[in-house]
Length: 75
Image (tube, rainbow, N blue to C red; front, top):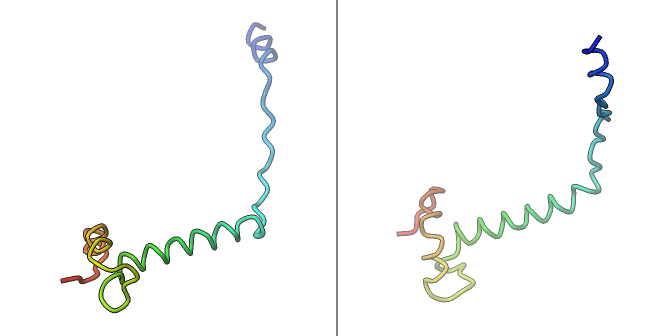
């Protein structure tokens, strides 16, 4: 009897099924993240030599370890 009273006193939370995310809500974020990834890939993989946007070796030195980690040659 005590168990029935104790379980009746605790409210049970209602679990509602989650709705799927609409594509219109996700698409701008996906495009934004994709562009950030492309910019990061450019700086790690191609920012040196003829395609350099910035003069000097500053960007190269900042991404040097990431370049080797991802398999891009630089020496």
